[in-house]
Length: 418
Image (cartoon, rainbow, N blue to C red):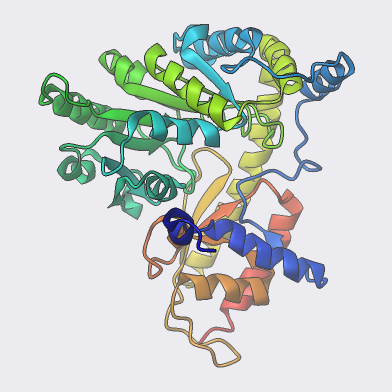
C-alpha cells in the first residue's frame, strides 16, 4: 500500500530525532546533559501547587466529559482578565479559543487563513513554520536573520517578501533563540503590514500576522515584551495570537493553550479544532480557570520560575563568554526571554581525535554529545543552512548544578579538536 504524497514528503521533527538518539545513549548508561527539547523536567520545575491541587480536585469532582468546543466559559473569562492585567490586551471571551496546548492553535490559524499555494513569510530560524507550510502546501518563504540583530527579523529583511503574502508568522520571545523584539523593530514591521494591506483590493485577502507569544511572561531584566496590537491598534483585525500556560507555568503536559483574535477567525478556528478533537482536557481547564484568578499565586510562581531559569541561562551565557575570552571559537547572545540561549560553536573543518572531519553543525552537535555529554539543537532544525554553526540550548530540563558541571566538559572537548 502506498501512503499519501503528503505522508511521503512530510519531514519529521529534527529535534525529536536528536532526542531519540540521546535517550538511547542514556539507556546505555551515558550521562548526557539534554539541552534539546523545549520542555521542563517536572521534578526540577513542577507546576504551581495550586494548579496541581485544582486539577486533582476537578478529577475528584468527575469533570471528565467533553468540554465546550471553544473551551470552558469560566476559563475564557479568566484568560480575558489575565490578558488585560498582564498584557494590557482587551479580548472578550468570544474572541478566545482554548485548545490542547499551542500547536493546535498554530495549525488552526494556518488552516483558517491559508489556502494551498498562498505565500507565508516567516524568519529563519523559527519553530515549525516550515512544517505547517508543508502540511497545507503553502508557499513558505523563509527569511534569513542575522546574529547582529539577535536573529530577530527586521523590517528591511521582510520588506521584499510581503507583497501578496497571506500570513506573516512571528514569535517573541523567539523559539529557538531566547531573544525578542525591541519596540522600534516591531513597530517598523507593523507599519510594513499596514502599508501592504492598504495596497490590497476589495475582496482580496489581507496580510495577517500570526503572533506567537507563548513565552511572553518569561522575560528577564529590563527586556519588555511587545505585541503588534498594543503598538498599532489598527492591526487588531489582522493579528491572531498564540499563547497559553504551557511555558509560563512549566505545564507543557497539562495541555492548556489559548489563542485570541478577531471573533470571526476564532470561530473558524473553533470549528477546525473541534473537528480535530484537539481541545484541552476539561479538568485541566477548570483548574486553570481558577488558578488564573489567583493573581498573588500567579505572580509568586512566575517570579520564582523566572529567577531560576534566568540563573541557569546566565550561567551558561557567562560560561560561553569566558570560553570566547580564552580564545575558543564560540559565542553567545545574552538571554532576553523564554528558556533558550543562542550559542555559536564554530568548529566546522576541524578533525576529531578519531580522525573524523567535522563538516557541519550536526557533526559539531554529535561530537559534543559524545565527548562532552552535552546535547544542543543546531539552528538547521529551525530552517537555517547546516553550515551555520549556531545552536539552541534549552535549560528547562537541567539544574543549575548540571549546567555548571557541563561547562568544563565542553571546554575539554573543544580542546581535543584540531
